Image (spheres, rainbow, N blue to C red):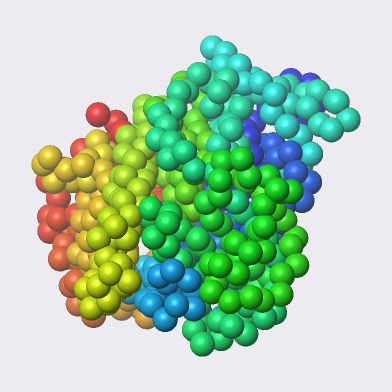
Length: 530
């Protein structure tokens, strides 16, 4: 193969170098798999979105080797807090409660959550990707076409000067957003739930708003429920501490940047006037979309290319990162030969129903729940009734955080319960459960188990060690990467309620029991060798 052809060939081409695409490339690059990333923008775009990163997402940054860099890039001081608040009518109405209290589930994850603008996250990921020799970054290039062939995929790209290139890959992953060219060219259809709402995104500077909100310390984002909006939010968020803000709200369908009083809209939402200097006025359509498949042969989609929804609750970017991590280890298994290509089917089987549940059971349900509340309770009509109902919403907000626990109980490659389904609805627990995220626990060495997990499979053996030897021998015969951690069922590890725990490369549990009948069959199923 000539040098030019070799440079334009890779096992994986990722189209779209935003957070999801870059995270996927880093996961592959750390495993030594050559990956070409095609990204049209030379620099991250300075529009604040995708700000709330969950504890689970920060685990990914830990394993990518970029957690410290990400926390250092934060635009709001760590001691200020990253919590939210929901208000009725206006920000300053006097009716408010804490919202999205993710700290409630902190014990079940290895890392703290974080908050910073998406462009700052992208900058950290770009820096990390540039450190990995296996990653070839093509900034300033746009994907024009994707053509599957018998032995791979051809990706046609062009730069701003009009120079064209053809890339060749075993697999291509479209992380190119809600208007994905990869999805379109692959013929992957979407199911759309359109709420027929035009939304405005305002980015502005204001020091007076910071002063007005100083009575709510430790808050970084603020939603406003107004009876005129039928459950849709007005939403303020901090970009930094004290100066820059963003704001989302429904606006009339005919609204443009020039025919609407956005300053008045901000003042009405806050309940007071304050200084405003606009930096950006943009619009987006509020709708839910879900691809009817996440795979078409050698073509995959992830992140907004696979699913999109309103930015309510910080689910979007976190769901996209989980797509990337789920697909990464499966592509690695297929490319490195320790898993069959059919393992890749489990990406759709696991991730698509989880997002469908996220959109339906959390985001869309919250809109309908807020709408019903506003219809039923009005302080002008019955203040006592309203205040009692408003008070009860605080506990409901806490329950939502605990109930959002994406899991793969219905996956064919985990030993989940009979009749289990893959869903975003679950419950946080220390017990090791097949299909669920592993909770962190200390080891006898003083390290946390998350500090010892391998980038392949990991067996945690809390029994007498006989099973560890059998699993090690079976993994060697099958060529499956396996690290074994042997310890005792004490010191906190008894909370796992299982003596043998097989952990996947994405830190989800494939198998948990107190003894194993056939390690070979367990490992075979975990990598899709049915």
